Image (cartoon, rainbow, N blue to C red; front, side, top):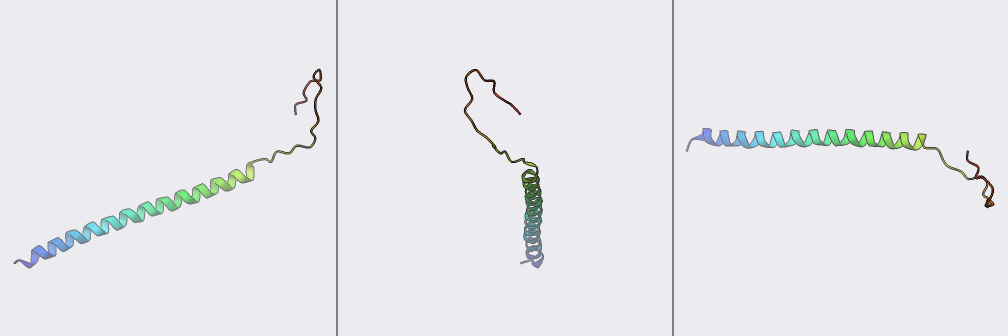
Length: 69
């Protein structure tokens, strides 16, 4: 048996595992970046959303116009 065939097979397997590792690393980095962006968007949404408040409620008469603000 030739020892170079084992070395070539080992190198091929190692290069495939390295490629898989790099691919997963990049996907994880992109997912973390998207998560950070989503959290920033949620914070901005919560900071800019006005709270609605009802100060007074009364029954309007039929002939009375509805007051809009």
